[in-house]
Amino acid sequence: MKRLQTLLIAVAAALLAVGAAYAAEQHAKSKPAGHVKNCSAYGAGFGYVPGADVCMKIGGWTRAEASSGVNWGALNGNPAATSGATRARAYITTDVRKQTEYGTVRTYFSVGATHQ
Image (cartoon, rainbow, N blue to C red; front, side, top):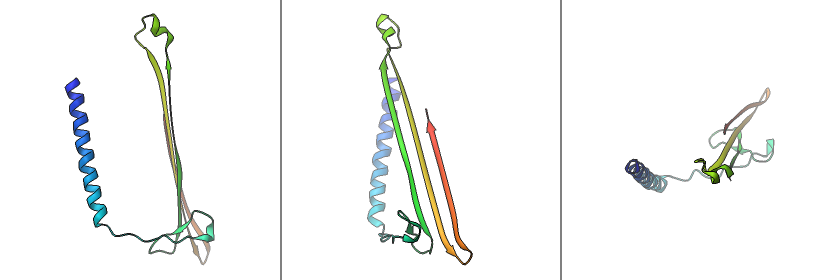
């Protein structure tokens, strides 16, 4: 079991190193996209999409929480020495708007996930 864990950790480290090298190589070849212009028509945080006449805002948040405590029954010989809990939440939103002859067309998308 110990050898399997060591092998998995070594493979993960190797993949991480190869991935980092590949990302650095791709970054060196890429051209800068340019500065995104602010779209003040819809408020703070909106910017023009390059090559289009639409405004977009991307937002969201993440939260991670971990707690651990001592199980006092473990001091009396109970094998479950510690107890712990983890929670994670993430949320992402996109808001795309375009002015047309009929008014503002808006597309709004939000998705979230929770792990307990």
